[in-house]
Length: 398
Image 1 (spheres, rainbow, N blue to C red):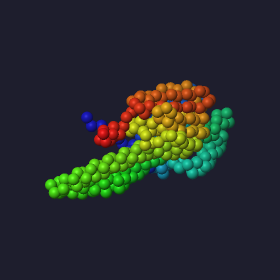
Image 2 (image 1 turned 30 degrees about the vertical axis):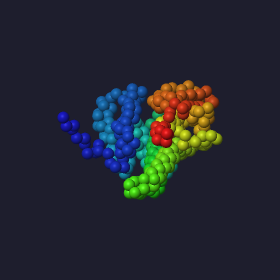
Image 3 (image 1 turned 45 degrees about the vertical axis):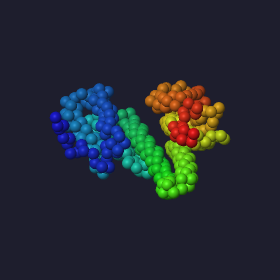
Image 4 (image 1 turned 120 degrees about the horizontal axis):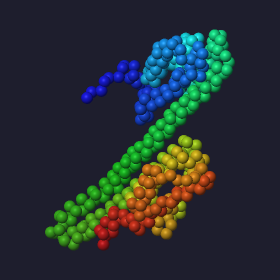
């Protein structure tokens, strides 16, 4: 069954608040949760009483003004910035027009001020100046028509606090989104650079070697009938060159694995230092990325990624450090931060880290004392994770 089409004014303009929410992967309708605060339109008469209570005038004005308010609010969410700001000012104008008979309209004023929030951080001061001017106009007009100070003194404070809270929340969301994009871009560029390096290495390492194998094989075939001894020598050379090529492939693959950890460390450094957390890492003496089997390298790299994400989201740390080393045949990764620590609540990320490490016979230990930061230690025994490439190479040499 085909869904009924939405009105044209409920289609998000490309630079609207709704379009921005969609780009961040969220529903634009979440902005309408804020309408719950419009309940004050209906509570004000209960608190005011008298001629401003639930009178026929109040019901008539609510029946006319509340749908107009909802339309203006929806327009401020779905329309382009210029129309959105006009809709927000329409809410303010609706309040001022009804104020002599309708104190409930003060809620429209608050919503109008909040929806005037700027789309760019550099416009914050202008926004605060705008709501200050609007509050001066409201207070002056309300006092002129006889509103008591007690009914008005809260308006500047409420509009400023709610406006700043909503603005800071939006700026933080945009910052998190930009940080995620930067983090993803680092991974993408690292992967692209690694693919290019692999292509160059394979061409440089194997191009000449495979050409030599082909030439010597052809020469051995021609010499087989005329000079068997020379043919055997050439076949021996083919075997030697093939072993050398295998050793070159092993070194290239080992470099690829080490670069995987290096890419994760670079991404972690960008993620944390963009968030104001100093991050350093080191490789202890005796540690070699080329010694890691592929499964071990992948598990440790993912541990770096998840630990960095947890520090950024939860730790409130100022400094973090990662170290790699070898201890008694085990590859050991330690990540320490100086954040708030506290109890650890198992989640998908933590469970995923533990499962990856257990898949390579490793273990995960987390120490998070309250106020003492968090220490993550991943330990993987290399003896239990033989590299198939190494095994096949050794078999070929026997």
